[in-house]
Image (tube, rainbow, N blue to C red; front, side, top):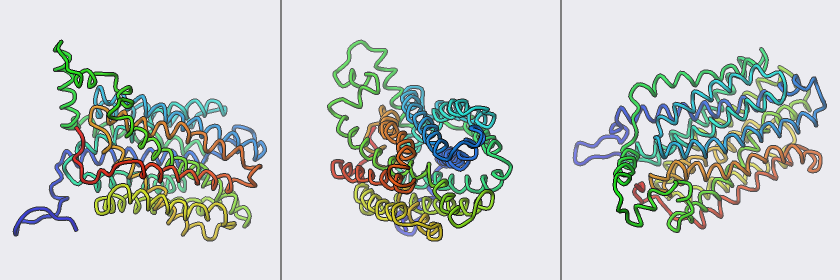
Length: 440
């Protein structure tokens, strides 16, 4: 167990975390958890929502429409993350976070009043813009606030919000699901409560404050060195400069592999479980407790995986840890989707699968943020994830369209899981960052 200090005055590293750092961690954790709560609830109510909006159309049409709407939401994630990531590198992480929370809360709740499928798609897209922004801002915010304080472990704890989001969603679905899908969306207004905490004591981390001060000082001068001019370039263009473009390639490959594996599964797991339960004669509201429990176990596995990632990465390095998690994703995910034909083994397999396929996202917070300097960090995290989401957004749609050709939704989802191998390529190409200071 990690301790710091000398002589008899040793104490646990947690005791050195300041009140400001705890506030930053809480806001980032809560916002990330509510993002995943929203996405998971969306996948849980997508089928009944489309069944009502389409007037009970055929399963194939609902499946294809569901894939399209999920793709629209993920495209919103991609565009919103990239846009707000750039904004956060200019006006600050805290102000951008508050703006995105407000917009997200409003448009998530509006999905509950949709009367047509296209309205649901529009509201989903706009809510997705702000959902995509949250973690892109939270990662650099926490990384910079804890730049010198067990950064990997803290970022791993922050990312547990994603696992708790699965659990929150499962419980909310269990309570509100029987009343109808619209009430589930109305719960999306809750994140607006976080604005009260943000307005009370959240300030920018020292790393970003230093960047802002340097920008202001350089703009007041006329004589600039080549390094100064590069520093003042439009931030997205700097990702392709000679000094940074290789890190950009590594980050994109890593994000692409992890996102293709997880989001297709996340989008279709509730439906897959429902289909397996139907084979056993369990349908309608009777299936809700089973799906809730399955998604809860998936989330619990993710929580443990998130936390473990930070500790393992501090011991053996970031790249070997990513490799272990990717092999685990393939080793559990492929049998889960391609070999298992009944619901019975799903609970235990979802627990193990969640550890790897969800837990690896601690690597997004730890490894990708460490690859880039402060003045481009938010944009870089957003670009790497956004590029991955651009391709990932079509994963659920492709899986939905390939249901017939590949002999079922489980086969299509299993094929998409194979793209996790891209993360292995990324860590082969990338550098190890465990012993480096967070770049300024």
